[in-house]
Length: 606
Image (cartoon, rainbow, N blue to C red):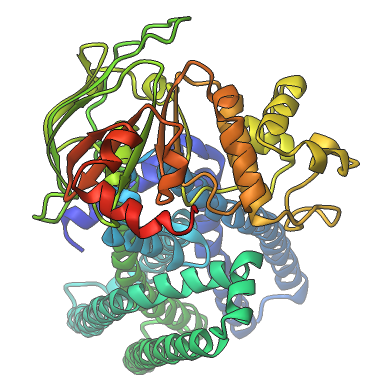
């Protein structure tokens, strides 16, 4: 491990300690108990062997045995209770990881959500350990200090054996040299074990990196295949075979990758057994020679040999644990890098003026935009203003920049060049949440959650019943409401409630419209708001659009040009620019994109 690895481990450990002080204390207490418990038996056994060899009376031996066993029993009970509590907390630490990462997903800049590298970073941060990042760190911390304390305890016990017989006498000098040689051999073996651990850790981490894309795609399929809506498409459109084949391919690639990692783990385990085994051979040979020379007793042979074997195993395990701490550092790096993704979006502080008359003016001034990591501009030198209170339709071919225009307006992305102003002030200077509150948006890919109907409309657990019902009625769901026994308490879908209702796509789209009405924001943006509606329902929505929107500024994106006829102002986008602007009558009478699109669709309106 290097200094950077230690930095990430320490950062994560401080975070754990700040939130869960008890589990940190528990971790170190468990390390101490696991380190000293084996040596109680070792010391007791050595003492009993010497006592029997010296011919001490059985009452004395029995007394010391009972005392030793009582002490060990006490520590074992304490260890069991602490370990049980520790394991319970380990399960909780993964929940903390998920909570932190989910909070970050909710608060990070929107552009990160469309970045594949960032999403794979999240996958690596969460999916590589069963116990989560915090739990994996606590486990390795416990083992690390356990083995250090075990090594130190063994050294204290065997120190008299090294100096037994006097250092400056002939046999003493031989004993010291032999002891140093023994520890030199053990040190070399431990160092070799440590280097092997680092090598295999790095190799396994590289393999895991290669599997990240597979795991990310597998997670996507897991979510998709559990969805009711997606399953309908898969069955009706005959995509099951294609998806099954892709899932099988991912599974096979994952299986092969995991098999290679497993083979490396087996090799690592072989080395982990071999190094302590060789160390044990030298230890027994050394202790036998010491006993033959009369420098230690039979009981000492038992005590020292068992202690040195324990030392060798602990040192070897410590080397393995150091290698695993390297993987912890890598996990922690991914976790912290995801958690601490910098805010690219400028954080404004100016509060948005509260106006009852909704007199808000939006100006695009020479706005150009390209998505992060790309060179092509999606919006080019766009300059326009919104007329307060009017309804504006936005049309254009696919890829003309309409959706990007909305993303910039709602500040999901910040402009690359130029600026957008609200009442003469750059929108980047406003408090972001207050600025977002100005917009009620029905996105084309809107999302209705498996929550009660009222919570979906109110976007929260506090629901103003009268206001929610009014929004649903204005959106065209009056008749459907009369069929719901639970009214606003009715769950949408059956994911969380067996009594939930499976609503149609058109009904869900009306719910999305009702949610926008409920918000009562000064700006209303509707991106294909009637795409899932039948013609009659669409007609009802258009007929009631004035009532729904009122005197608010409304932006309406649609591919159905007939639906634009009720708008006073129409913007025609092409290649990231507004190439035409005017009323339907004006644009239909001019040569240009609008007339081409209108003529292509006109046959359906006759």
